[in-house]
Length: 114
Length: 115
Image (cartoon, rainbow over all chains, first blue to last red; front, side, top):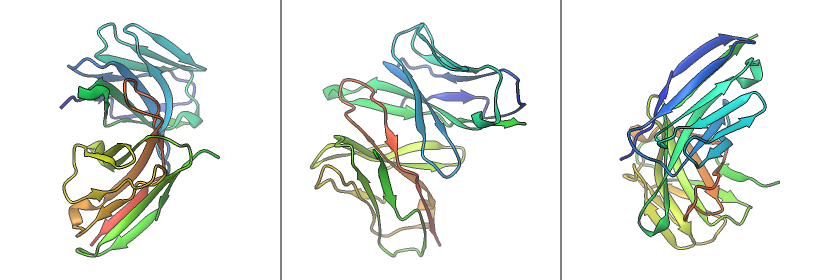
């Protein structure tokens, strides 16, 4: 079973601060996704990265896929209270028949205090 | 509006009383999946379906059944629920998870308590 470890598990910061959360594995993934989940709702996709070393930006969020495709990071610049939520990483790996097995990390619970 | 709809959103029931959680998607997606989310354990896959009449076990299938008779519907059945199945359940759909990791669209969840 492929495992994805996320750190930190909990993070509480003041509005305006920067932060980075990490998603690490000993396994290689063909793609890595980041989702955000708010209370009472299901996860919503933020980004998919597929190439080792790839960097994608979504406004104040910067996502990076490790060169070896085993890890990823999410950096938030000048965090806002609206960034509060549970951030989940999900790795995809090809199985027999071409099906992509998706494994989710436990998540990082972020609280941004106004 | 494109969406995944789960019902019920909340359910409190007793051990052994069969229940079904329905899931419906209106995006013509081939792939559907059920997850449970527990504190400290994250999202774990219960069952998935690559297409109509094609289902397979995920990581934690014990105590659950599913069926995929139509493309849009993927119900989760607990034949004899037990307290260890108390959890937050999510249904998700995706255009396909064959050959590429396409986005999964999640429902809003079903909070299930089994006494």
